[in-house]
Image (cartoon, rainbow, N blue to C red):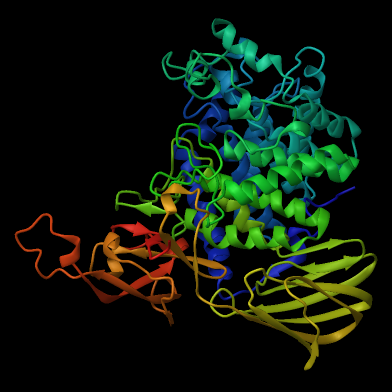
Length: 639
């Protein structure tokens, strides 16, 4: 059996889109090659070679560096699934060979432990990321097998999964500090049909929140691994910062271990860990129908989206633990909003969408794709944000690589697999979830269906779908929440559209053209009054894009501009700017500078303002030109 990760597989969709195709081509031709070079320079691949050669010591990088190589294999495999590339295939095979040769006879592979602390495997589940790395190995193995039919890496992944299943539950009763193995095991189950992988994923989910093992490790730091990393200032000690409360007691919130998943009401802790856990739980619900787990997912989604999410779709405001804090705590300049967390949110929401067909999940995927995620990658495909603030004093810039390099290869695998987020299938019906130019060739309940989509988003809200099928298939077309009005025509005949959500088109298809026209406005958005940092401020959206002001485009310092709630906006598309963007000129006011010469303070009654234009560009495009201030939220005349 070869069940896809989502209901539509990567090789069923070919993207041909004015906006997204340049990103995807650059990912294939620049990013993946560049990241392979970084794997070499960082020592990630050399770690595997040292294990193969039987050496001890000399480990390079973070203790979870193996995962960077696995995510690179996954991204490259998605590209191979779409089109063969002999050079890329050869390079992937070389890396797979390193992994396979480094694997122990018992199925275990983790270069940190094999080189540095071979006698302390599975002793530091909190921070040493053995299960996390193994999860990414399994994800890469499944992706490569599905792309090529070659079992080499799949057999490595199976060997590791079998080892984990043999060890956990009997010898070790515990859960990973960083979730990832759970969703990977379910993927492996769907490919192999082996029930033990689903059972072990269930164990890890159900054990969370009951786990005395993670607390025990902090009471026995002298017995667990991690002291040898970084010359003794190791992971075991460093974990205290995020896992212990002010009284030195274990606090499981960082790893979502504070309560059983079924009882959790608020998104807590490290945001990437949370998203990977929730993605796995949603997969588990799909397999088991567990209604308690499903109710928890619905509660947690509501809490995240209504009280703990940035307007960009970014999540996790806190730097110290890379994660969530409390309701409405959404600072701008100090926002963390890790790129990996945005990617994890997309993973989770696609699973929610596949399960329910509810448009709100597709709406959030769209918001996050165009804003919270896309900002994480520079226009050259070789520079990346780990952290995505919503305001900057000009000192925050993308980098080519990181000591903790999780985000770049994560972005590469999302670009490479983007096609599986555009459409979905459930209950014998097809859903058009995202408006991205593409060709879909799939089967819906035994009926072959082809969709040729063209789209002018994000610049103009129009799309057409040419649909052909050898039988009757209902096709559901999303009307985004941001659309002020919408029309759908089939070969010129208008269809009733009632609000947002999905419009169901149930008919025989024989090459008919569905034209979708969405009305939208440039909108000023206010935050909930409890969001302290956005009080009296507005953000500017021209959906699906959130806009930002940069110093390079404006004469005055950005803090001097105020955008009144009734401000008009003029949109202008500039094909020569930032590889082609639509800019906005907003009506604004700035302080009148007359009379300030020689004064530091004056009576407010003597001051005034004057009209000005504030120029904005899409948030995703900031920091691709001269360094300078940036802000998403602008002063306004809100009460």
